[in-house]
Image (cartoon, rainbow, N blue to C red):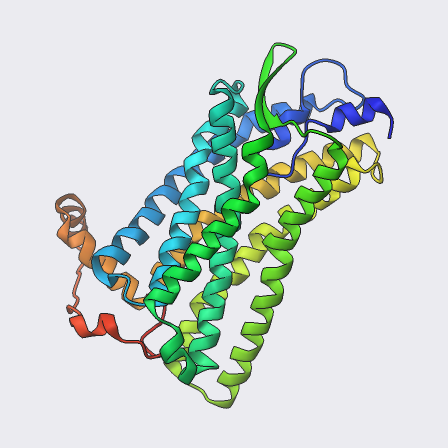
Length: 358
């Protein structure tokens, strides 16, 4: 690869907010100014939408889990951590929204922290969805073993391990991410020491393998065994329990697989396999679309819990009735919130029938 091409690629990165780095002002081997204008015109609005919906939805999930579920099962622990992972995404969006409109004005420290938060949320989110699939596998396929294995304590331990892995995998963001002034424009980008292509290869494969390939293999095994078990022994409660987690898994891959494909194609661009300027611009446009697609995923889990989880709907109605303003709005709208309080003993139930993920 020529030195000029290397320069044009060195500003790129594998995380979902770095396309700004390669759209610097001034002459380039392949001009990306149109892509930059495209990003500034629509990303701030979409970022704001994702931020508001994701923030409110996941906070509601966390409140319901603490107030009514009391984290008495492994499933509850994983759902809580998944909501926290989604919040990590949305909390970084105001920074990136401002960045698309103007430039990076928050300094190197916040450049490192915000970039790191995003990647930690990405890894932890897929890991907890993977753990929820394993949890369903144990509850349905290995029901007897699950009575001892699926405890709250083990859920906390495995959650701690997941966070440690996610934090470790995201360390390069803390080490190499910097706020850099280029042509009177400040960006937040990676500045690798040593061979840029090698680091780019490592970072892309890390996301593809840890964020897609390994979880897909584990989830495919778990759900193939679950389907096999359910075909042999039909159970309505088990079917409802699997349905919600299965939708969570499918939606994750629908929203994040395109992003993984695009960053892999961008790796081929860095390696010189893809050298066409128009194709490079098309990849940048695709990167923006798949980024937003992936970020919208953090808003979906609360919606899934509400529409597919009967218990969550009941708890949410209880929560809104106890809050003065939402309760008054519901009464004004004529919404009838009839519910029956659940006995305390139900929080301690560990049977597969009652662990229907809210």
